[in-house]
Image (tube, rainbow, N blue to C red; front, side, top):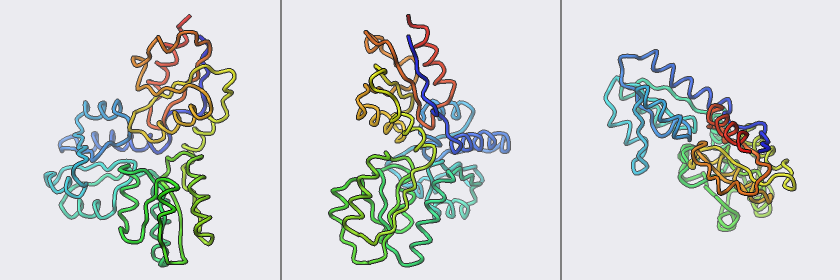
Amino acid sequence: MNVIKVTPRGFCLGVVKSIKMARDALKTYPDKQIYMIGLLVHNKIIVKELEDQGIIAIDDWKKSRMDIIKQIPKGSVVIFSAHGTNGDVVKKANELGLICIDTKCEWVLETEDLIKEYLNKNYEIIFIGTYFHPETIALTSINDKNIHLVTNIYEVKKLNIDNKKILATNQTTLSIIDTELIYNEIKNKYPNCIIKNDICEATLLRQQAVLDLDENHIDLLYVVGDKRSNNTLKLVELGNNKGIKSLRIDRKEDINKNDLINIKTVAVTAGASTSSIIQNEVIKFLEEIE
């Protein structure tokens, strides 16, 4: 089978850094219990590997991260995810005698600093994000009163902000197409609003690579990545919207050969938290199909 390897794909530098920090913690604190709050990265295969090495994952969506850290024994190591964590939670963890390792992505940190800068200038913040995503939760919780979360153009229409000083920014892993539509709506409603599109470079490059594919010569696109990975889901969405049948899989074992009937050319990409090992297994499997 003809296989097109979409480039770039897979791990971004932020994910590589976060995983390395978690593995380094195992070496640095061999005699301590190490907890991972939430999913370090949105890939259950990677998380399972870390758990097998001794890290205890706590991913209870019914509890806030503030409540979770209060239950962790003093002196333990706590790893906060790449998606970002409210600074008050990290501060409380330190006060409780926990050893904190914050693997927050630099792009998320940049957005966080931007939001704080403009809040200090008495701006209202419109934040484009995804409900219940840890990055959105972390960034909108900086100020519950002056940060307004929107997820689509209809929620923009419902906004009622009197302050003339407004900054709009966004979650780093959104669709470039969806985000542009929402920003256009924001600019129509608030012409003086400052716009700072903070989709990270890794997300932009991976999405653009899918948009650049030739739908006339590709029969199927596999996106390798976890169902909880927002950037993975957006790659699937972009592929389908472009007219290429696009399917998400976790690994090669998820490939249904019925989907490959009459398929001559298949493209493969991967979310930013998918390892090269998993991607290469998928590619090798497809290349060996005659």
